[in-house]
Amino acid sequence: MCGIAGIYGKNFSGAMDETLAEMLHTLAHRGPDDEGVWISPGGECGLGHKRLSIIDPELGHQPLANEDETIWVTFNGCIYNYQDIARQLRQSGHRFRTHSDTEVIVHAYEQWGTECVKRFNGMWAFALWDAGNRTLFCSRDRVGIKPFYYAWNGESLTFASEIKAILSTDAVEPRAGEDGLRQYLTYQFCLDDHTLFEGVRKLQPGHNMILKAGKSPEITKYWDINFEIDAEHDESYFVDKLSRILEDSVRLRLRADVPLGTHLSGGLDSSAVVCLARLLLGDDIPLKTFTGAFHEGNEFDETRYAKMVSQSNNTEYLETYLNCDDFAQSIEKITYFMDEPAAGPGVFPQYWVSKLASEHVKVVLGGQGGDELFIGYARYLVAYLEECIRGAIENTAHRAKYVATLETIVPSLPSLENYVPMLKNFWREGLFEDPARRYFRLVDRFCDNQKFLSDDFPSDPERTFEQFKAIFDSHGAAAKINRIFCFDLKGHLQSLLHVEDRTSMAWGLESRVPLLDHRLVELMASISPVTKFKNGQLKYMFRKAVGNLVPQDVLNRKDKMGFPVPLAQWLKKDLRDFVTDIVLSKRCRERGLFDTRALSSAIDSEQPFGRSLWGALSLELWFRQFIDKTPGN
Image 1 (spheres, rainbow, N blue to C red):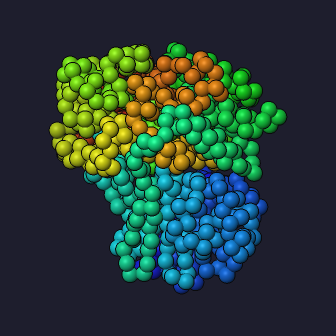
Image 2: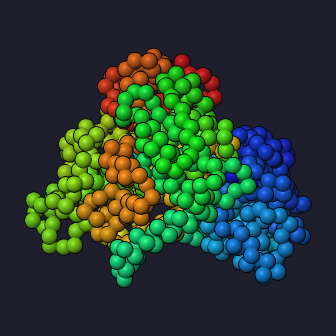
Image 3: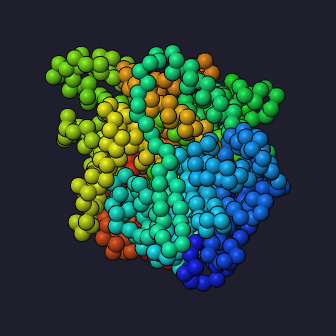
C-alpha cells in the first residue's frame, strides 16, 4: 500500500525530478517507509513512489524494473495471488530478484502484455513504462479499491494516488468543475470519471489507459459486471460456492509480512470477516480487532455486538469513543486527506478508528462492500416494498415470478423502524412512478431539500438524472435489484472506497476488503434476483453462507445502522457555533451555492442521520482547503 505519482510527456514545464519530489512530498503519509524516483533516459517519463512496506519489506523498493531495465513500474496496492502467478512465470523462464508482488506485475506484463491484469486478484493502481514500445501503461483494479487520478493537457499527463499531488504541479489550476459540483450536490460523490476539480479525472475501475507519443490517452475497459443469470444451479449450490469464495478471499488477504488485524463494527459484514480470519489463522495466532463508538445512545454504540464477536473469536479487543470535540478538531484535517468530500459523516469515526489500528498493526481487514454486494441497505427494502404494494393493489404480484410479494416481505419490515421520517418524505410524491426515477430519489441527498440550493445555482436536475440513468440502465438488467446493484457498485461504493483509502492511508495503514474480491461480485451478479433477494430479505445469501460462523445475535440483528454519527444532536448544542461560523460565513454566502436562510433553519431542524447539512459543511470546508487556500470567515 503506497502512493504513486508520475509524469508523461516532454512538453511538461519545469524540472521533472523536482516536480516529482514535490508530488511525493504531498503523498508522504501514504508511504512512510521508503521513497523512489525514476526518470527515463529520454526524459519523457518519470515515475515516483512512496512506500508502505507490507510484502518483502527489504527488497520491494519502487519504482521497480525487470532485469534489463526496459520495463519500470510504480504500483499501489496488493496482488493477493502473486505467489501463484510467480510460480507460473518461473516455469516460463522468468527470473525474480525479490519476493514482492510488484515484481510479479513486471514479469506478468512481459509474458502477457496488457492482458496480465485479468490474471490478478487484488487491488491496484499502477503505471508501467515500456521502453521498447515507448508507451505508458496504466491500470486500476476491477472494483476501484485503489485510486488513480490524472490530468491531461493535450501534450502531457500528470497522475497520482491523490489529487493534491497533481495540484502541487502546474498541470491544473484548482477550480471547481461544474459537472462534478452538480453531482456532489445530488449524491455527495461524483460519478464515472468526474471529480470536483476541473481538469482532473479518475481512471475508472476495471479500466486500462495507454499513452504513446503524439497521441491522446487510449482508455479501454478490461472488466465489467455481467448479469447473465446462472439458471442451471439451485440455492444450495450458490450458498456453498459463496462460502468457499469468501473463505478463500479472506485467506488470500491474510498474506502479509507485517502484523495485521481487523475492523469490527458489530455488524454482520465485519463480524463475518473476523470469524473467517480466526478460522483460517487458528487459535494460536493473536488477532486484534478495532471498534469505534459514541456515548449518545444505543443507536450510536454497537460495542455490545462487537465485544460479543471478539469474545467468541478470542481476539484482542480495542475500542475508541469519540465526541464532538474530536469532530471539531479533526474535520479540516480529514478534508485535506480526502481531497474531495465523499460519502457521509462516517468518514470522521473511520479516520479515528484507523488511527487506533495504525498504533497496533500495519494491515487491517474490513467488511466494506458487503451492503452493496449482498443487498444490505434499507433503501433496497424501501424500493421493493413500493413494488409489492403496487403489485397487491393491481393484483399482479402472483402473475409472474416476483422477487417478493407484500405478504412475503412483511417479516423484513422491522428493519425500517428507524427510517420512518425518510419514508414520509419519500412517499410524499412520485409514488409508483418509473423505477429509475424512484431509486434516483432514494439516492438523491438533496431531493427533499432543494430549498438548500440557491436560486442562482444552475442545478440542472434533469441532466443529473440522465447521468444517473445511464449507469442504472447500463447493463440491460431486467430485474430492478440488479439495476440497483449496478448503480451502487459503480456509484455509492466508489465513495465508500474513497473514504476507506484516505482514512487508512492518512495513518500509513493498509486496508484490505475481502468482501470485494471480484469473484464474489461475479458470483452475486450471476444469481437470480429471486434467490439472492428472496422475499425481500436483506443479505439473504450472505446470511446463509456465514450462518454457522457468526454469533446468532449478530446474524439476526435488524437494528444495524452502519456507522452513524450523532451530528444532529451535536448541532443543537456543542457544535452549533462551530458549524454556524462555517456555513453562514460571508465567504460561504458569496459562493452562491446555498440558500442562507435554509441553512440557518437546518442547524436547528436537521433530522437524525440527515445528510443535507453535512453536505453543505463538507463542501464549504473543501472550498476553503483547496480552492481558496486561505481561512474563511
